[in-house]
Image (cartoon, rainbow, N blue to C red; front, side):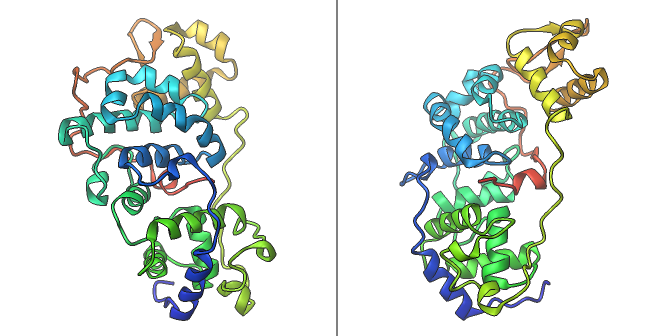
Length: 317
């Protein structure tokens, strides 16, 4: 797969078709864009559908319009404002990242991929997404939507990440990388889905898979397990309870419900993520500032706290 060639004629045809795709109206697509606003949006879009993010994002950004505003608010306020999006670890990492931006760059969010990659929870996809939209990077950040479009429309075969990035760079070369990338995301979200709607897709006439009558080269990943009764659900319930105030184990067992072992797994995981802490006497809370984190210090330095490749690369639209 690593030796796949990017066909120039196919790339040119797909690029032309993408240029005519009508983009969805989403609040983080206002131009000119600010790197901080895009970083917030791309962090929210990890594993959360765009319509849900569109409901929360404007209010969140109005309240925390700068890294300094987010950092100074404290973790409890940030988690409360994040409510409904799930995967609260993203909010904690964003909060710590805001502290680094304040300390290191005087509150000015960077737009260069390498600098963004030094922030907690910011992996290759998010960093490239901000750099393409705000920093002039000529490339395509590879999330699930982009991966499907590139594999089907441009390559016609499964491909490695390196080949996908090369195909993406060829696709936007000489064009508006920002707009073309948004078009790729929208095609992947609306037509080039796991079960593609090729007859409705604006790329049908240029798509390599369609034009050459190829078998679908898309290889979907393993589907996520059911939410109901899962550890993810228990973690969310625990956070919702503790955001209202400190609670003992007995209260948590009553208010959260479910399996006691899952409750302890949730508490251990949330504590490891810096989202909750115990006082050593059986009471649990969401810390305003995690232990060992002095006032005004992010305690992240140059270390990276990745969300994990699966999370970082999955923009769910």
